[in-house]
Image: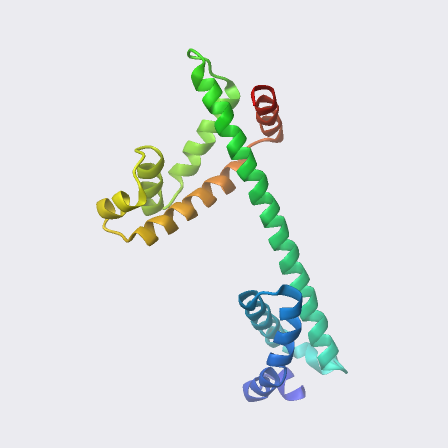
Length: 196
């Protein structure tokens, strides 16, 4: 521990190999995910290395290591749960939004400030996409082209097109969620309840 605290990389390698598997088994029970477990274990050891100067003050390293790992795992799981809930909320919001837009488009020239504001946010989000994502998104959503046709037109694989589309949609949702005010969101939800 003293050698690691002084920056000895060989000693750190020994420390890593001594605890890596044991820590991985422990984290895997918490996360039930090999990729997430690997990421957390690497993150924990990176943190140990970055804060190695404080290791001299630690009397019992193994409990210290496992507490850090457990906290990281719980934080990751909480963050994933929050992200999943946020994605579900926005998926529902976008579904409700499409229902509202279809209703509004059915009215003769009827538009609301909320709809204009929402469309403006979407346009702003699209304008900020990287060029390739923007092309893919526009070809798919504005010209109704399928992934194979987009792939052929842009000289990309269908898998790459799908990846660009997924990233574009995520960035648009993030942009809209961070710029749409709560009153507009509530208004859209109310409209969907009234007309749904």
